[in-house]
Length: 267
Image 1 (cartoon, rainbow, N blue to C red):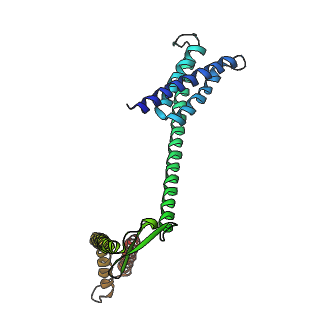
Image 2 (tube, rainbow, N blue to C red):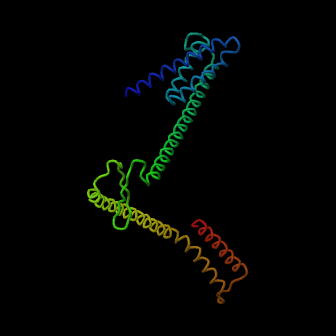
Image 3 (tube, rainbow, N blue to C red):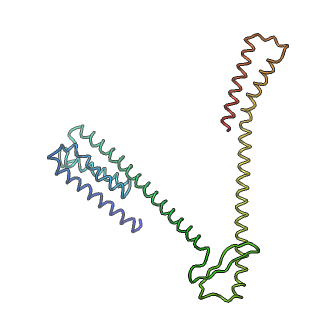
């Protein structure tokens, strides 16, 4: 455990003990106004802050410590961990479960708030970087710039202090190789992006082909049944009565509905 983690652990334990002690003292002061058994819910005011600040494990620890303190000080026989009435066991169990659940919900809310704050900081940082990049298109006060060109392409700008402007011949010798390097890097990035897009298209086509092959049987079956039923209705050499023709028509309708469902699912 790191030194910071150790300090956090000690602070969590001390805060937990202090909150349990404070709530216990409050129950001592209030038990003359209300039954002690109904005041056990006040220990939730010790569980919630610990869950929000330090997390679920410490909230569970506070829940157990609160249950033991409540049993020791306020449930008969007093100043022991034994219980005389079975209903007190039920009350303690209900309290413990409630405290743990409330602590977990509070800790989860804390984690979501922390995640939202982190995303907000990231968005602010990206906005600052974007603004800096947009503002960097031209030299600031006290700066000079040289365009970097690879052939006819403008690949960037080289900024330097106006007071320390290098010799023009030296600058020309530096700018040309630097622009070429940047041009090669940009071409490589463009080619890599094109290759990735081509691979994505290839995989997409492969997936489409696999899907079509997998559903080809589902498409052929109703089409075959419809074709067979239609040919049966058309053939004059078949001696079909009204019932047989009705069955063939029903078969065509059923297979057409099945085909419609398959096509709808594909779309």
